[in-house]
Image 1 (cartoon, rainbow, N blue to C red):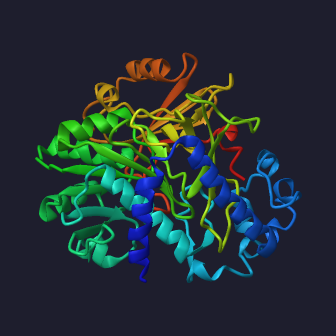
Image 2: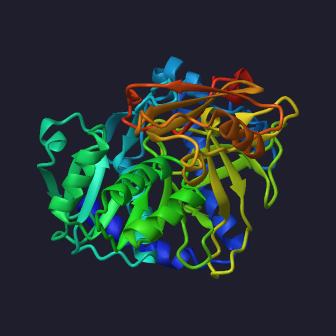
Length: 439
């Protein structure tokens, strides 16, 4: 049986498990977790002693799960060989090498097997189904390929939904200029747009609106960074489209996806354990924001057990109104480096409010950078250079948005350099406390 056939069968199973009662689904998940932990303790040197709290008694118990140490990015960088399994069950399939983009400043290399890829593909396709995406229609994707054919907008593939080989997928390099991206979208005329997060959608919409373009998409799929209210408003107004936001990472696979029915982000409970933790390590309750900690349940080649990925999220209800038994996140707040931290302990996810800042500052692109607890730089590429910034009003706006004691500095740039993964970060914090958890 091919990997695609296995993914189709797994997806069909997921349409049943998602309707399990939460308690039954939790039992299902715990069985997979204990199985992974026993494999890691026996065949992965890094975990030989690390999993003792849960495996010291008989077949294993998760009562002391919180005592298992968190896995940091630095652990993966420094101990890649010790994290690699010396032996795999035969059903895992072939093992592949991968690497992250390094957008956090700490790229990592990881190993993944066919079993893990099948699980993630099945989850992704289930969620495509939630949003009614037609695999025979065309999809335009921006991605960091560093491929000249992609940079020219000439790269394409067939079959972007599993089991549907006829849908065309157009591919363009994410790093190309935003105006060239819009020109390309006009030329290929896709039904669906796959964009790289809220900042990317906002840039596309603002520029398309400024140019008076009539780009329309049946749906916008987003991944890679948090999607805020502004991006959603602009998507509706400029592109006449709703955003289906997917939350995942290359080293873990799909983590959660926004539900079309209840609008929560349903966690892929059958294939990954997602914890949202307070600073003291205890579990967040509904409505609380905390650090995201992940355990992919089918990652046998390089188990990532209690992996602190570097994101904040807000915990949603255990039982959502749509009737699915999957746990949920109310919001994906973003990377540690994308949230602002203040001396009083507040953590907020700011955004460059284009509709308001645009009244006082003429810009083509903008970034908010927290340089100290009470200092923010507004870095921007000017649009109309003849229009002077209204510094007083900008300061007032930032104090309303962020903190009454904040000081503001404007920094004009010729252009922004893209991050290693081609992503643009609308907000960045350089405050030590905001990134202290990233090892």
